[in-house]
Image 1: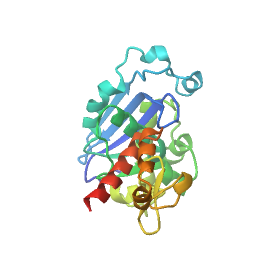
Image 2: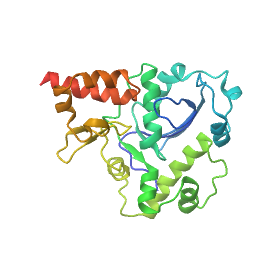
Image 3: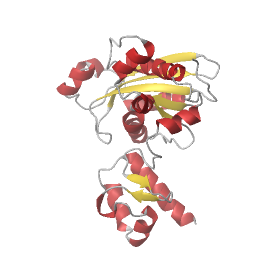
Length: 255
């Protein structure tokens, strides 16, 4: 089944130095862009992370320090990558929890104003887990009847994820072939920030989701304890979380 697209969609996958969204870096990114007219194009970049790749991580994706030492840094690639994805919805496998948050951090570190406010995020893993409870390798076999022999290669994983989503649409007639609907279905809950440090309460208000103010309204806390905002901005929190918090604070000033 072909995707019913109102705008382009970029399937992407990252290989990184680790799984810490705030601290780890991209070493490879693959993007498979699909246009509403059915045109498809794949982009793959190796990236110098500027920090050592741990041996345990290299054992997973096979990328060593020597393999990326002469590659461009993400800062050097950021605008080119942003130009590819800026008009598109984003999709991946576990992308809502990992790939999109880490990509946002890298973009913001590079001075690119990355935002997901006006586009969909479709997490194929969440659809798969709601339907079948498996891994990408199993998903590829289940939906496409193919073996993912090059798992943990960003390009192979990216193409497999794209094919899995099409297979899911073929298998489940009650899944709407619409990116807005798929984004809503594949999102576990409506996010405030990628890292989950902020969450909506039942009234739709942004609340802190950690620490001494967990469950309290962000607006109320910042009004009663303005130093808490400064503490977060100077502490080791994700850049995107800080950006969202600043937007909430400025919104209060403008009222």
